Length: 377
Image (cartoon, rainbow, N blue to C red; front, side, top):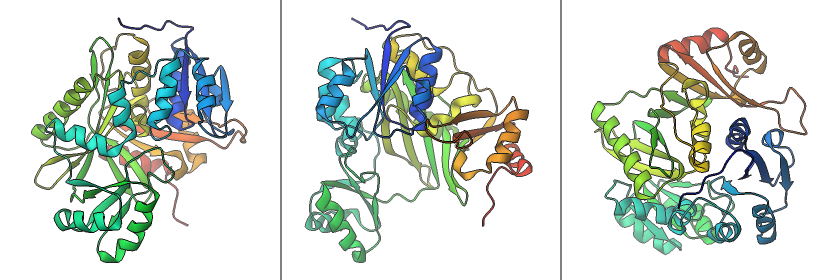
């Protein structure tokens, strides 16, 4: 039997990122109360919550007490262990099956599962020692990437690229901290990202594919991405296949590596909040965050249409704030996701700016003319 949550229900959000802040904002706009669990007092989520708990860590007692106060809970990826999720699941709804909890928290199980769906992933191997690494490299080869299998461990997002045997010392130190997965390096011409939202009725929103790039001014998200139509169709097929296979309720973001030959490798499939999807604020008729709340509480998903032909999303820390605020007071076409963490000065904003236009070139021209990018010192 499907579970529906009506306005007035409390949605619990664990985490203090900008993505969590936008999710809390959308939940409130749709009529829901928001409870928040964070580890830092200065965070952008607080201003959109009915109440917030600040804890020293996510231990069992803290999680149980939080779960008792909410009707449904969403946690940022990488914060909780499988055991933590099961603690929450004993008390409230985490909207994740046991199998999906394993996929969310363990990179190895994620790769194995994607491989079982006959989807292309980089060659990989579980390694627990330097000897394991040396043996795996015999068939994976250099360069390769070493990552922690468990996402919730400290520094789990800090991967190590091994170019030669000179990197063995750093690799040995990382593998001593936790079991790891060693992946082959895939020469890539583009990183394509697809976000899919699905509710319990099986309704799907498949967002346009966007590109994530790194420039001298930091990371950017750009839409649309220039791909052959066959590659676009394959990425959309992958998104729908994975969402339905895992019984997704909520959001799924898949990052694909595109080679020069047009081969599509899945780099990761993340369930839940995706900071990259902030580009949907202002550029799409329904943001990823509104759609995610709708899917989680049992609401229907509206039709999706782009509000602009192109968009570039820029992190605020890479921008000249005075020039950005000038545009904020003038523009109705750009998207702005601004937050002022409680405890900081009013001018200490965090967030992103979504520049929209008729094409990527037009967006770049607007960025140049408005001088919003910080100039090198």
